Image 1 (tube, one colour):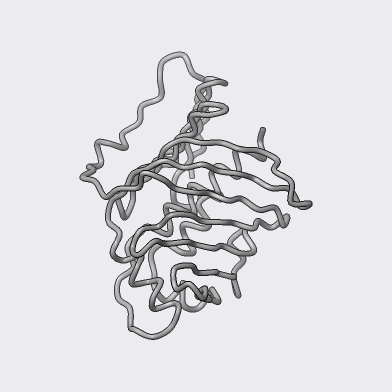
Image 2: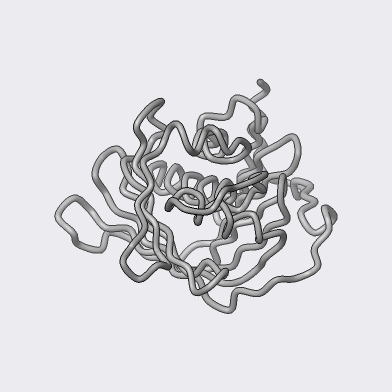
Length: 211
């Protein structure tokens, strides 16, 4: 269960970081092309199906749900099957609410270990250029990112697009396990910070980890 929660946070952090604004890009390289696609994204919501594979390539777990985001600071990743939990980030906190266990965990965004991928990829074009080797697939719509410095907690990240729309991602973690996420019903939409407001429900166990 704990490993599943950590992987949930990893996927949420990764998707959030990939959709945070990156300032400028020049034309030419796979990195430039990826930056241009990411910079076109402002707000999205949609559905996802996630499959986790073990080191032998067998499906170890599956889940599905919905996500929404408003860059640069707001993200929601909600699993509705087989269990029921949600991760929400705002300008200050990362919330994890497990409805089945009736527990809420809050961590500050700054310094949160689960947000390391967000910190590596999120805010600075120079970081992406300097810390990752990026290759573009022959179809022109997929990218593979391999860390070359300051290990962010995963070995490889692959992104799939349909034009400017992100349709999937795959993470190979530090244990060589693979997480595949397929997105559907993805749409640009008008969102506000109020759409990401979260207050712990009455009666839950709250674990608050201050920075």
